[in-house]
Length: 238
Ligand SMILES: [Mg+2]
Image 1: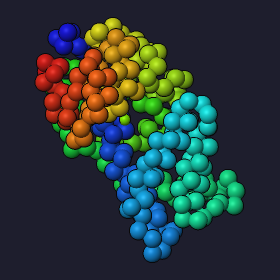
Image 2: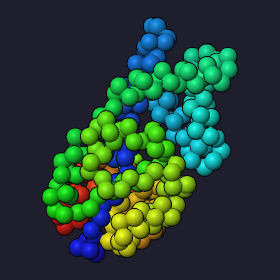
Image 3: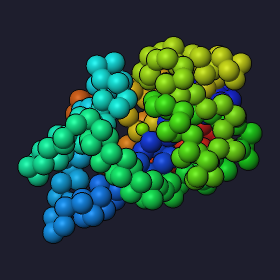
């Protein structure tokens, strides 16, 4: 099966781009600047959880894009006894956080070497990311990633997010290949690896350094599991 793969598709956040670290560094700096004397590091986990909660509500259509930002700002600052006067104040707070987040952008160390090896082995490379183009494209441009990708598909532009099979099939269509000729690599088991496998691609779950739960291990039976992007060329036969 692996010998037939001609196209390798990647997730962006927490697969190539170290989103989680940038988020933690960003919120820590933002709190340090706006709440003097408060150490934000113990609260970074809660910021992560609120992103998970409210961004998911955006992906399911329950909140619009600015709405999930306001919800994250309100819930987080409520923990410090702070409430925002209006929507604009919550959005402004989030904008300042975003500047700190952008300052902290970085790639995983294995990202560019992996892309270079795939290119040297003749693979065609693309991206499918859940998000909006105006937010995801600057990461590709700023971090020198853009030139590595023949096609970049964002859920905001396409109209349906992963794990909807439609976005995987649409991207295979852009490359002119069958799903069986493509692999998809991402850090989320269901959204990325299982979603891709359900659409007929080879699903690869990038687990990095944590242990899977028993439920995850069972759910991952139909996908490849790798600890580092360094292992990717090996499982593709590159
Ligand atoms: Mg991801």
